[in-house]
Image 1 (cartoon, rainbow, N blue to C red):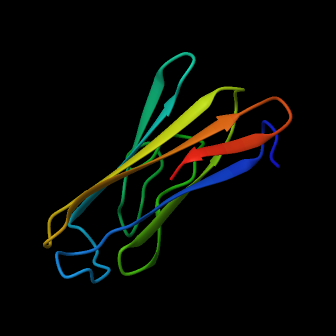
Image 2: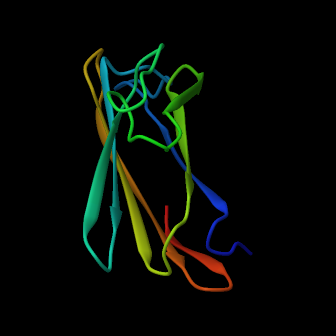
Length: 112
């Protein structure tokens, strides 16, 4: 279980029409903190710049291997955190969503 202030990982695996893990040309990750509706945007870049490709004080999108990307987010509030991925280009047009419900004393994955 995680508490407020602990890191959660949002990840996505992008594939082409043949099911092969493939890097999209453009990768965006949106994070919405549910109660107050704050939404933030990340874009993948091999040499990311804080404040340009990801929010100041946050972690950048990381590429683990072809088509595999993730963002670590340190939870700040006891509420629903929705992460939405969109990858497009290079024979990929795909979205995925993961929702975490962060409580004062634990963490629960709702979908992935």
